[in-house]
Image 1 (cartoon, rainbow, N blue to C red):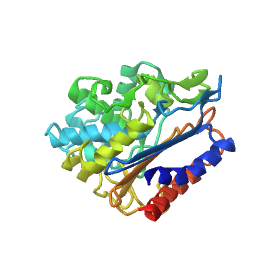
Image 2 (image 1 turned 90 degrees about the horizontal axis):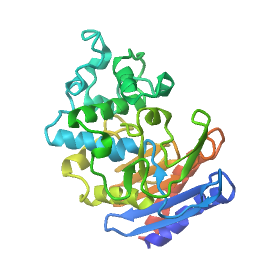
Image 3 (image 1 turned 90 degrees about the vertical axis):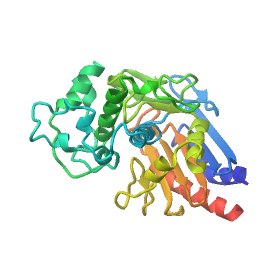
Image 4 (image 1 turned 60 degrees about the vertical axis):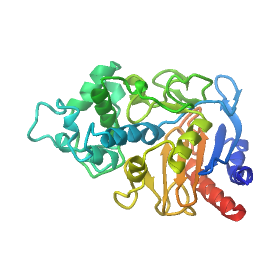
Length: 339
């Protein structure tokens, strides 16, 4: 049954590949019982040479790093008593805005604030234009007075969380144990190409696409994780059946913090990228490179759509924002019809 679900839902991606909107795509579907199907088509790269996509190719997961890695790490630290979610992040980084200990708004941010994207920090900032020394750029992030604005989805929230993890563990994020099929770059196998980068002067393949993450050493709280389609599905199944996360972590990522978010993840809302057919007990997240993962706990079903939509350039209309929700609706429609 699950093979037919994937076959029906992948028709949209196959059409996008045939039409040249995206070079390649892989759709994976898994149930709480472990039934799994993966379908893929197209190219891992079209520049500088064409390379056919395989099931074993590693995708740059981009912001899926936030939920698969960073959110999990922070929640496990909270569960084990290393931190408290509602304490200030200065407990891990006492030098944060150290020249304005009384007035700096950054010193009053909590771990929960950053996980739920309810800070004043900007969505994104070109940190990489300030140099390429990873330690100096981390110092820049910690000491800069960030402009105050409304709460938005922010890479800076998770860059801070990544630095906090490094401080608390005394090690790189790369040292955190991950499931097979997940790894900080460079990945241990063939990688899908992303953008032909004007700054770095080459097509990025096996190197992290995100400029800030690249300049900060390739492993940060907001980006840097690579994964195969099966690696992402293994992670999702572990959340569905409880083998990959504790009840505390599974509960924390499902509890809403506002209408559209949980801790780290998005929670189903009208018009989101997971489609409108899934249950209210669905969480998900996307990545800039063209990746996404959604988990419907009510149905015991998860799916991941992995594409290289930024290859060879992000500056085109590739239809990803229509493809993702349409695929989610197709997955649910097929699953409900065949169950």
